[in-house]
Image (cartoon, rainbow, N blue to C red; front, side):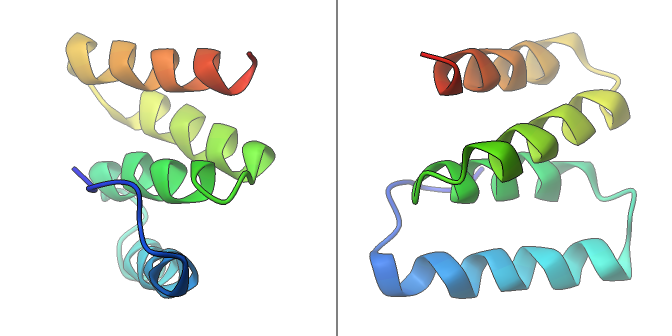
Length: 77
């Protein structure tokens, strides 16, 4: 999992790297969770939620899906 908080200069580069990973493999589930976390840091709520929701649709393990749902819930506080 991604270690947060990211230093500000690394946030955009990290998101771009995740975009490239998704481009290369749309089914790479963990990247969606990590990208959601990266978007959460600079306050890009809609992008974070979209990535967490995509992660939930791809993951088969209940525990990580629950973690993603908690992340979404935090964004609505």
